[in-house]
Amino acid sequence: MASTNEDHILVMLGRIEGELKGLNALVTSTSEATNRRIDDLKVSMNGRIDDLSRNTDQRFESVQKQVNRRSAAVGGVGGILVTGFAEVVKAFLGQ
Image 1: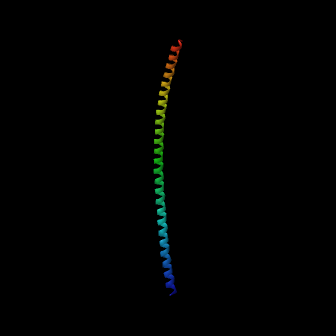
Image 2: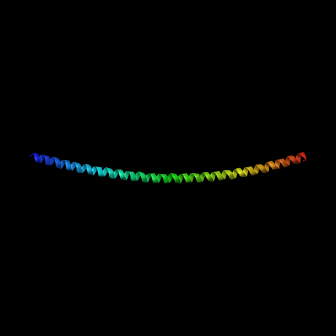
Image 3: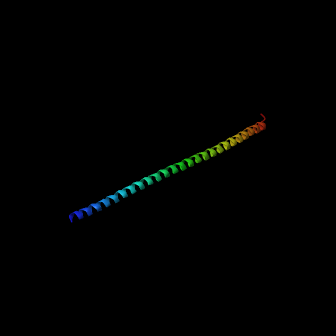
């Protein structure tokens, strides 16, 4: 009778061991899959951030070029006005 109880206990321990190994394999597999998804997400997000950064840089350069052109135009117009004003002053002063 003692042998039957011991055999029963050994069978139950074997089943428990098998279930624990299965659970361990499942957790390991799930962990690896989660890590792969995290890595994929990281690559995707870094790509999007890089694209947005390039896009922002291009827009900034475009705006900066427009500001430079407008500044040059305003400077040119200012120069013409000052020269014209100087000529008017000279004409009135008779020089």
